[in-house]
Image (cartoon, rainbow, N blue to C red; front, side):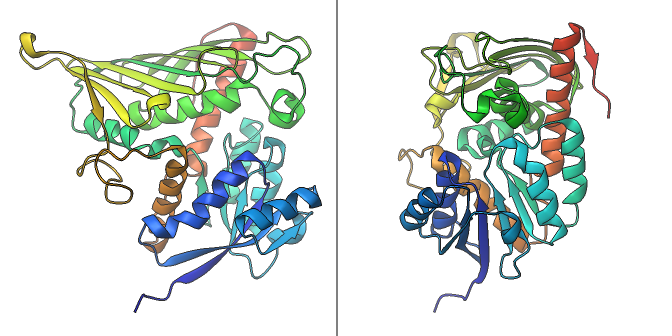
Length: 365
């Protein structure tokens, strides 16, 4: 007889593309991860009742609501999942934490550093998660393992790109991601936040940076592209580029790490693969190896499919949720959480200030 699981009633605020991704993770996590919890899709909240009814029907949400304020205080709700435009992250997260709920939030955490600091302070007494899902790509998790084992040696360079073509239509000036009052920033918050989170997780703290941003469409009041030079606490130097004006790149979230003993390279557009170079091998055997990270000793191999049976974007959210529920069961701190996202926000804030002042900035804390 299977063990009875504790039900976690979920209230998801928002129901767009990312709401679909989260809904799938709530449905699937119990099939891939051993957890004492059973997520229950209790209520989905948004402004458009007709769209809400369609989402609820498709994904099995039991109820719909059009005012998030009526949802976060409900006694039967244990988890509030924030999947709305950035401008609403702070009020919902702070209210949910005050009500004692488990708080899950999309990235970027906040509209500003001040908001992020208030949000991180608000949730310190409740379990919390930020959906920086790319940490759970098996190839990225394996890269972290190799780095922790010293396989690359002393790190010299960290290079990151996040390129797509989603904003390259100059007639597309509408939509919340192109409005500073709703998004807080453009490419900086939307794409660069992911690159910065991976960099902090894989290579440690950024101590100095200089940035440049560019808006290619005058009707927009957010950045379309951003370029950053950085110094890390470990002595390495870094470069970051993010753009929504990169035709030919659909979702190129990539990094390359060069060290005294080798190289690691990853590209989300081939998310099951990790390229490695071992400089300690004999010169006549050296070469870049393209590893298919689906083997029995690779991260999450036991959770998903057999070796060689590749996974997709959706599995990174399932793995994020599975690890979170495991940490919740063990009463352990989960990462990435609001504090991790606050660290990202500090970097994003410095990027924006540097671009405005056209100067190098030192990051405090």
